Length: 226
Image (cartoon, rainbow, N blue to C red; front, side, top):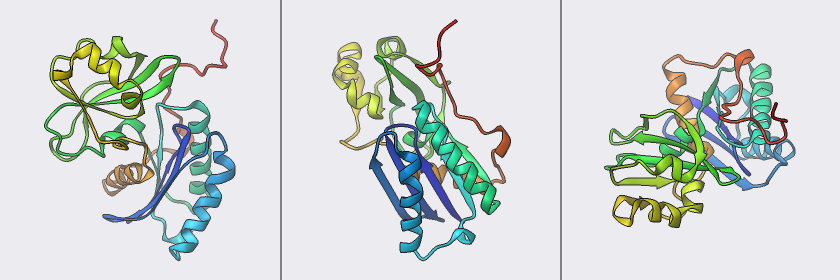
């Protein structure tokens, strides 16, 4: 099975094409808010380089959030457009699940933290000892201390939120309770989204095109509070 994965949940945008267990291409760029302009160009160039066309794509996987409001909307719009034209199934993949996928067989609980801005983070806890991420909490958003202060067991923290708040996490929990992945571990990768999407597609799952919406845990900044 050949799957196209798209990641636009942050200022990092990525496109990956996988075939079975092989990563054929995985392109990640720090391109801010110009996803709509850059992503189709990157995808077209990648497909030409691989001598692929749309008939070779069996399904599409898209990062659904939580994350950047603008990025998620753009990524979903692109994937919906592709799916409508080529008549292929879409799978929505939670962003934090994709990050946890990168830390298989971890002995410790894995906490994925991503930046939610204004001093907040998105967070979820995973068990990856089987080699696949099993989410064991709901997705949450809040101040760092509020989300992690009750953690009792030694845990691995990954994601750009863990990178940004590494010293605070260590101060709150104590160095004996925390560990962090090597630099770059837990960054957003379209290939992880594609692999998780492929697993669901092979089981016959898909996300209804007309019901596909981003996963938001709070209102966008520009919406006025009533």
